[in-house]
Image (cartoon, rainbow, N blue to C red; front, side):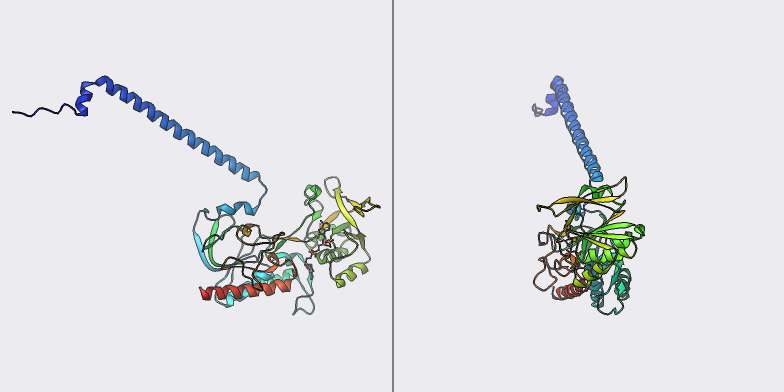
Length: 387
Ligand code: NDP
């Protein structure tokens, strides 16, 4: 006897119910359509988000700390180095000289201002070894030559992000290249401070400057004002007095903060006039600076206002440490100076060291920066020999 054909097979059922098959086909098509539509909508929304965020980034003022989360994600090859030095002032170059001589093959990225703040200064008279003084730019050029002589790889580029969260220290350069460094020496220095009044931006490049040696030349035989009472302000005022007809010093207290020798020099300079207890309220001028609105004796019973006519307005009120991209990982004080452990250059992250003005709220001298750069290189070398 032949066995009976199975009666429960799907094919057979379908053959038996063509209406059911047609219905299932229709349902499947509807589901497929909805899935496809959903994927398309999702992709379009994401695309729009990307475009919007790119547009926002384009219009946002540049803030290198904004790139922080991208440090790991940056595309491209990762270069491994033993010792990465970020910054090229006296601290960075001294660290480079020592690290190169210790065979750490240091790679240095010079940053936005190659040579650091000393390249914007005039005579450096207090760096030991120069009995007749030396200009800031010359000294930095010499330091650079010395660092290169021992094999430092000095490169153009700005550290735009840092990821110090893991055992590998990742530093992004110019938002593109990633360096994986066994040791990082942060020597990023500090940047000139502004008063924060809107007119500084309004007249930026049209009479407002934070660097007398860079821009003083444009104000020859004109009248200018320098704000501040520290060594920078005194030095800039004396420098400008040699170029300009008259220099006003706008000092908010009735004393200078700068050194005695510089104070005496400024006070003896005939074309410097010191405006004690004056503060800047605003600037005026038709497209370019033509003068300063001042408040005199602010907060006192004899408070009053005054005006001076000047063509140039120079800020010399101190500096802000360039530590923004590291703040997430390292300890800083309220101003942003990186804190180091005891007398060393060590930060709280093993293998990461800080030196120079980015970690020195007190001395801030070229010679002290150089000394701390030396300490950072020695600390880095010892760290590498111990791991
Ligand atoms: P400082 O912090 O020493 O001085 C800043 C000056 O600006 C002070 O007079 C301060 O007034 C004034 N100031 C700060 N904020 C304002 C404000 N909002 N409005 C008005 N005035 C303000 O900074 P410097 O850049 O002068 O010097 C930094 C360090 O570098 C110092 O240690 C200095 O000795 C050193 N240096 C050394 C040089 C050299 O040796 N050749 C050259 C230049 C600097 P106040 O005093 O009231 O706080």
